[in-house]
Image (cartoon, rainbow, N blue to C red; front, side, top):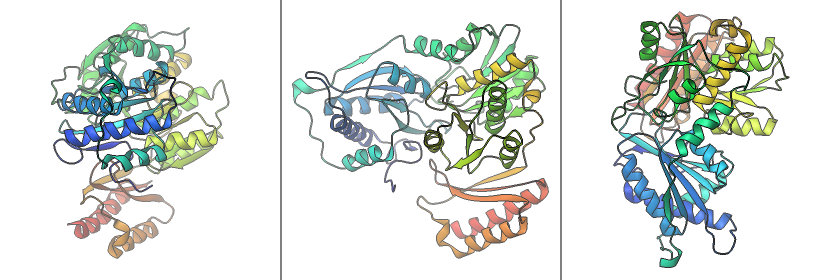
Length: 450
């Protein structure tokens, strides 16, 4: 699908610049509301209802008001929950039997970015045809519903408590976390009032960092995209484990007692390997960015592996097509479809912790010898819409790099779905060769993109 506004995960950009402006977001809410009215046949006298959550960015107040106005103008009821993790919005949308959930967040991006993500009534990302219907209506004139037909707006105060209980329910009832000292890094983001409580209520001794949001410090030197702070905190506090979430808490990184960092590929493997001890695992879905070592390790324990396009929505789509339960991205989006409908950093961490409790292993032991291949990722700023395939010099350099590696590694060029970047990734067994190949290819891209 060719999208004008939607990327791989909703609409995202710099606050104050198109499309993240109050007028656009109001029209986005109005168009989404009209699309819901067209798709859902409601009983007489009732209207579709949506839930709106957000992370801790200062701009969230402005965008929340704009969305609220747009949905109300379309005649759609609105429920506000304030700062709440993205996966919590997906859960509550299902639990409250609402027609859609909306999250105001730019996930792992800095505070000056923001975005709008949508969830269906089933707690999954919107299918392409619904996004197309919303896009088609954004640039159309707004026709406000009659005064008596405007959507009402209300706030629910117990959203955090409901979600905390849901997270705890995904951890085995016969296990607890007593005796574990865990550092939890909330990235000054949406989980700052939730994640520490989940692990504490399950018995852990919790040390919290990144839990003092001021509207401007989300993901700033903390969280899953800046895990150095967690590594240092685990060592300083002599903790057993560290858990890092990103700004909207759908990504996860973990750290062991020695300060060793584990990414999404490793944590996905730990969960799957743990599950495979007691039940058959039909298969695992990764992405084009998943480490080749993960694929090889799964093959050794006879678990099929498939690659989807980058983006957790595409992982979910492939899991549903194949009837599989587990998947994820190396960035830390981890799907356990027997526990939740979307990637959830807290729930994923609990699945890893369950494996540790059941086996008595540490994180390194739970991985069973999995060692990731060296991977070099270089992000190159480009103009929006830049198509590297239209530049012969880049295509030739890519082919030359693939020929040079000759089966000893992988090369991938892909545009970011959320930022104006071209990602250059090279992976292989020799770290020096990988680094040199990535830099050489990246230099060619830079010379063309400048």
